[in-house]
Length: 264
Image (cartoon, rainbow, N blue to C red; front, side):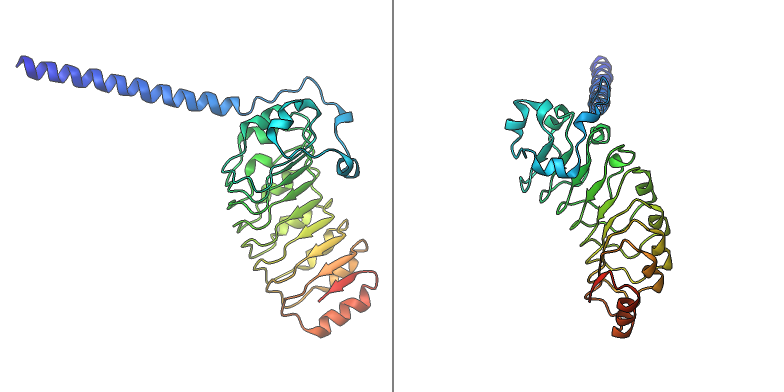
């Protein structure tokens, strides 16, 4: 009896210990997750939000080690082809980062804190392993340019409308089959790149994007282009090569859109 009771007590003790360990692991995960969002700003400094032209002239950091030497002066960071499977945590410290490029890595999701980076205007996620547009970027107050081409994205989600200043969207070389109706509500959109997808319809609603300057639809499954597109007076380039669109339609578009370069 006593050995059995001893064994029973040992079992209970072991179970309690395992529960404690499980709880501690869970607590650690919660703490780590919450810490990921702890990017704090005393105030918003408009002087640290630069135009795209100003950023072009600024120093580009290509090493985290170099960037960490003076993190408050880093506005552009490029980690191209670094074989990264996740976003480095050191980026927490780059509070005034305006441009972040993570092209050609193995990243499939973003950390929570990325959505708290108030100054981020350009985010480059091309050639990674994303299956959807990361929800962490929605409501980023100053994000203007999102590049997430050459991934495995199938759907453009409605939450894309929540990015208030988005005016450049690059989604080429994904697995998108349709342009959803709500995309036509992004009235600030200047550049839309959807090359190399599987889109078979462009709706007349495209005319609602009256700020659109560049539209790339090469190598999809389009059989027609709505004539309403001629209402886009700011459209400078329309690329539709590699689609089964009759030449007669293209010739008509060129007649009605003399100021738009149509590549067919």
